[in-house]
Image 1 (cartoon, rainbow, N blue to C red):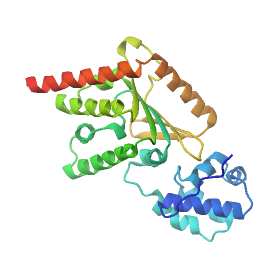
Image 2: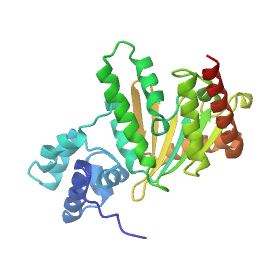
Image 3: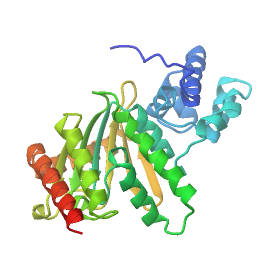
Image 4: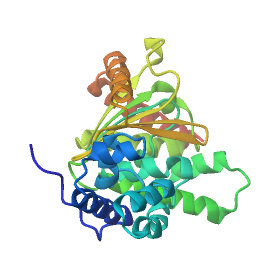
Length: 280
């Protein structure tokens, strides 16, 4: 089995803290499980902190300083590592998403963030915050568009998105915005950069009707599942929980249209929206 991936401490504050945590833990002669036990946490959480896939919370930083006798190092540096341009409930998930090797996502209402066009993202945020100043919306849109850069690499991460048909038919921002949004996703699928499937209305009830679902896998850390509600979100690393949601995702793909049929639906609806815009 290969050893843990070498982190570049200069790449981000989280990478710096993770590299130092691994160094200090090994220097103290502790396994990940042994260090986690001091915090009543799992060894996998320690591994995720060391790999930079999870943010180090202040309470953990203080305990690490106490256990590893690091003279306040983690507490002093933790604040920089927890700053984020994203809302608190999503910040940790966004940071994990940026370094995931595989992302599988179910979208019941909205196009997933990294797949959104600028115009679609603006329409979404304006719907969320109808009275917000334009500069606030601009900042939110820029952060959303930046997430899309994770697709700049031609192969990593591997992205597989399952859409509820309602996501394709809900006119967010009007027909021109939807034509561009669906055309963008179809283009990514047509170029074999992502895989898309659609759960059609005809499929009836399915395993993920309670809400969105995001599964993330990493090169050198255990997988995570992110579950989201209105202004709430939770990352789970418990193996049984992750496995249960993986089964849910497998059931979704089994009930969805094939990737080829799904791509055809994206392109057909994009064309319909474009024609609708021209008619107006």
